[in-house]
Length: 160
Image 1 (cartoon, rainbow, N blue to C red):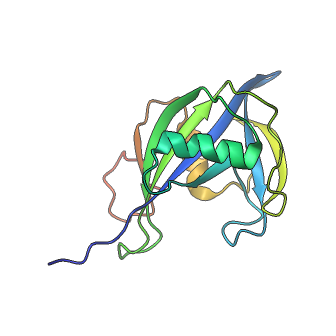
Image 2 (image 1 turned 90 degrees about the vertical axis):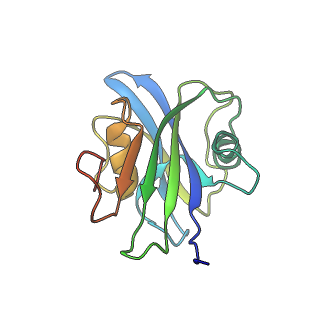
């Protein structure tokens, strides 16, 4: 019998709107999370819970982190990523966008989010979580699957 590693799934929600100079995305400035604090990231994201679909997780995270509901979710892409040469920290991330929702996005978890801000999709801040920068750059390109952190990823797969 072979020991199998566990893949950790997560769902990300990028709220999009048409701004005066083009499409804008709502990002949060992370703080006190222990992961990528001081960097900009999806306004809502988190682990998919046992028995939950990625769509359900995206809706739950948007409600818990932004206080919004009734998202018009659009599946954008999946990213398989790791930070190690050994497959001990494998992750599968499901990225969604939404252009419609009920409520006004607000900081619901102020201990973890220092700020929410709309950024032009073509003019993002420098300090974006690296794998999310890759996902944001791929929105709307038709890329359905990306990898991040694998040394031997096939060419054209969205390697970092």
